[in-house]
Structure formats: C-alpha cells, structure tokens
Image (cartoon, rainbow, N blue to C red; front, side, top):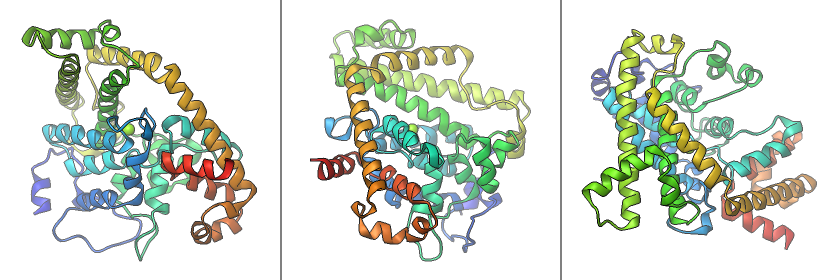
Length: 380
Ligand code: MG
C-alpha cells in the first residue's frame, strides 16, 4: 500500500522504494513506507520532545502563548506537507525533513548557537544544522542495534541544509552534494522555503502579541498592507488581534500559492523529469516568483531590525551568552558537574580526547529551563 501511494507522485518526486537506504541495514517496514518510518522515529526521539522547551524567538518562560521550537516545527511540517501534496512530491519525506530540521538547536535559539560556536572554536565549532544530523546519526540512544535513529539517506541529506567543504569531506556520502555542488531534493528545498514562510509569519504574530512590533509599523510593508487592506474591506469592524491573524493567514496563503505556481513553472522550464534531474539542475527549483521574493526579503529585513534586534530580545541574547559560556567553562573545568550517567555513557569519547565535544553535546541538548536551572545550581 505505501508504494501504491508513491506511484501517484510526480516522476521527479523521491520515492522511498528508490531510497539509498540506511547506514545500518534493517528489514523493510510492512505497513509503512521507509520515509513514514523515518518521520515516526523523529517524533519518538528525545530531541524532538525537548523542542517544546526551546526558544524560537521568546525564551520559553516568557509566556505560554508564544511559539516554541516545537510549535514552529509543527507549523513548518504542516505548510510543507500541504505544498508537497499540491506539487505531487513526497509528502512523507518532506514531513520527516521538516520535523527534524531544527532538532540540533541549542537552548536560547540562535544566540545559544553563536556562543556555543565561540566556546568550541578550537575544537571544531558548532552549528545547529550539523548538530541535527549528529543527533539522528549518533546521539539519540534508544535502539538496540545502532546509535542514533538510523534514518534513510534522503532524510539525512535533506536535514543537512548547509555544510562547509572541509566538514562535507568528513561526513561521507551525505556530504557529497556539497563537494559535487549538486542540488538537494525538491522535498528538502521545500522544507527550507516553508521554514521561512512559517517563521516570518508567526514572528509577526508573536512580535505584536509581545508588544515589540506594532501594526502601524507593519503598514509600511506592502506585503502586510495589501493583505490587511483586503481584510479590512471585508471586515471593517474587526478587533486588532483578528486583523493580525486574518492578515497573517492571507500572507501565508499568498506565499504558499506563489511557491506552488512558480515551482511548477520552474520544473517545467528546466525540463525536470526525474529526481536526478533535480540534483543536477543549476537552479533551486522550489522558490518564490521574483516579485514575492522581493516582498519577502523586505519583511525579513523588517523583522531583523525591529524584532530580533529589539532591545528586550537583545537582553535575552546577552543573558544566553553568559549562561552558556559559564556552563561550558564550568564543565570543562570539572566534568563531575555533569550528570554521572551522561559521562559514563561518553567515557570512550572523553578518553579519546573529545571532552569538549561531549560537553558541547550536553549543553546543546539542554532546554532553556534546564540551562537556567543548571546555571543557578552552579553559580548561585
Ligand atoms: Mg526552523
């Protein structure tokens, strides 16, 4: 049955029956496709559950109504699934990549990543995207026969959005596309653009709710103003919060429709008929039209300047720097401060001289609140 569904997909969709397989061989599932199994393994992972208490923009304890890394991930999966179905590409693979795309995020969002990267400068650095792959390949610890969750090549490759050439050489086949300068699958390209659609729009909603940005400022952006005008023409007496949510709905709808239409056109224009054609194509095929791209960049710039660099958000960034740097130095100074069970599990890596990486994995895996509790415990 799973293959029957895949038979209805476009010729350029990635089919699980053509998968390059898993690092550790396993019997095929009988009721599900290989990519469905990947999706379900991601949902059952520890790293996935921890996303609930990790920052998207606002630190987890700042309010219960804001997006967390988990709700962001679910929104990305929802949007990308809908677009995948419309484009007749593999919905299960798209969903698996979407659900795993942020697994490697540290506590406190990008601020956490940047400071952890600085702490790890002499020891190979840190990047959340690489960490997502490390989690699914090595760090998840619940299966009898292998480390990690042993996902299919296509899911792993899709998760690895960017990678330096030097690192790509060390990653084996999953890093090859960076060396060969090839495109990722349509399913991976789609996850990238849906990530952007999701965060730009939910950050508008959360930013307004948190009173960091205001409708009056957003009115200067054509992408917001035009959609809001249509909402107000239809519902002149709407409350402010409903104006925002109706406008955001319309923007998402417009972006999604644009991606579907434009990507279909690009696929046709480039004569794409197989997933190999996608890999060899010099262009990204899942993309906005030029006009929408321009409007979207304007929105991103607005959010960067007015929300992500807002003084209150920067305070959180500075606090994250202190917490993560303090924890890294404290653990590096005395490994006994880390959970005994975790150290015992990683004793071989520690003995081989990878103590800093073991500490980095420990900190990267923390939720916002655990990092804060640890900091209080060690530095009260
Ligand atoms: Mg994301």
